[in-house]
Image (cartoon, rainbow, N blue to C red; front, top):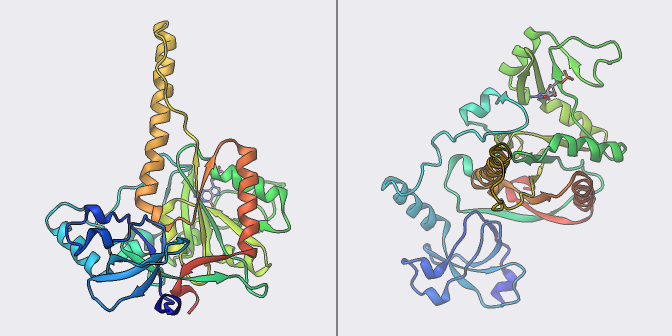
Length: 340
Ligand code: 5GP
C-alpha cells in the first residue's frame, strides 16, 4: 500500500551495484540500477538507506539504495582521498566538434543562477523528477541536439526543419559579418555591429557564440523565445557546455545526444605501405570518434534524455522526426523544479 502512496521519484545519476557496495547492511536486499533509471522512493525513513523500486519493473518488492545524503557524503570522502575527480574543477572541453567557439561568460564561470544542472554544483546522485505532459496551450519544449565527432547535427537539424517548416524552426543567429545582397535582416541572421555583439556577450544574451573567418556568430536566448512564441518547436544544436544554460523551467529542454555508429576497426592484410598508411589513418579517425562520444557520455550523459545512433542522414532524420512528434503526445520525466 505504501508503494502506491509514494509520489517521490528520482532519476538516478549514477550506476549502482549492491554486490560491490561494502557499506550496505544487506547486499541481497539492494536494488541495482543504472544511470538514467527512474526510481520510486518508497521510504526515506532511514537517513542512510532508502527503499525504492525501479519504475517499469514488475517486481513489487522494494530494495535498498543509498540515500542522497549518504551517497553525497561518501563521494565527498572519496574526492578528499583522491579516488574521485573533483566535480567542481574545470572540465576539459570536449574536443573535435562542429565549430570552434567560446562559451558565453556565464558558462565559463560556471555560475548560472537559474540553471538546474545537478552536475554543476553537487555530486551526481539523484535528481527528483516528475511526469510532465505538455498541454496544447503551453509553448513547445526546446529541443537540444548535442553530437559527438562525426554526428553532423547541424545538417540533421536543417534537414528535419526543411521537411517540416510549419512545425519546427531554428533560432535565427546574430552575426557581425556583412549582409549579402540576397539576405534579409532577421531571416538568415540578425546583422549587428561588432560593438553591439560585444555588448550582447557581456549582457549574457547568447547561449553560445563563436568566431568564424574573423566574424562573430551567436545564438541568443531571445531568438529561441521568438520561435516558441510562434508556437513552433525550436531546435538548437549546441556544444554540450551550453546545456547548463538551457536547462531551465522556461525551456524544459529535451536533450538528444546524436552519435554516429562507429564500425569496429578490423585487421587488414598488409598491402603496400601507402595503402597501409590510409587504413591506419582511418582507424585513428574512428578511434577519435569513439573517444569523443565516450567523453560526452561521461561528462554530460546524465543530462541526456535520448541517445540517437546515427546510421545515415536519412534514417537519423526519420528517427529524429519520430522523437519530435512524440514530445507533444507523450509524457516525460522532468526535474520537479520545472513544474512547481
Ligand atoms: P556564413 O557566414 O557562411 O553564413 O556562416 C559561416 C559559418 O558561421 C557557419 O558555417 C558556422 O560555422 C558559423 N555559424 C553560423 N551560425 C552560427 C551560430 O549561431 N553560432 C556559431 N558559433 N557559429 C555559427
